[in-house]
Length: 146
Image 1 (tube, rainbow, N blue to C red):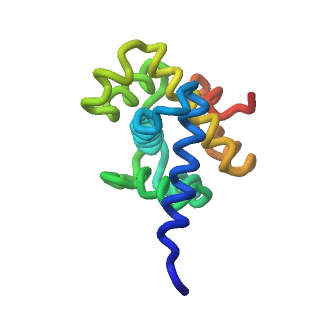
Image 2: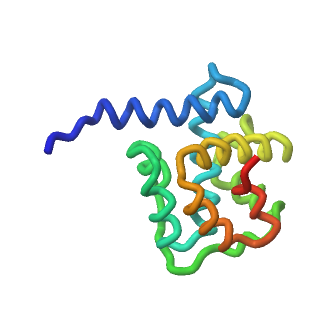
Image 3: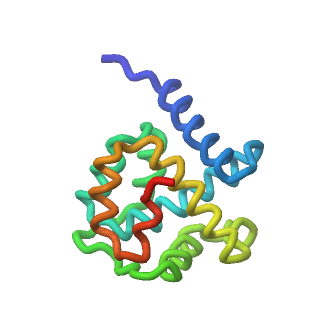
């Protein structure tokens, strides 16, 4: 079986372009990729490894790589119970880019909603329901259909 790395890159770039469009800035794929990374990393730390693996099984290969980059797998998910906890987790995962990309809470919220809009378009409704059921009530709207 031959690996077609260019196809992996193409699929991943398309996913990131979709995030840029959802964020309202289709030309800034650099910012979209930083937003995607920060949101996915904050979210993965809220899920168990099993839930994470089920979620990313439906992602393009390059997005899977972004998701697992730097992951320290633990059987215990972080306790992000409130919307404010999640906003802060995204900011932390944004690292130095946070200074430019996430100046206000509104910008963080905008990034979160853009990323989840694209995630929901790539993941089956059943998997979205399964993951939503594991979230605290305050975070479940992230995964509800528009």
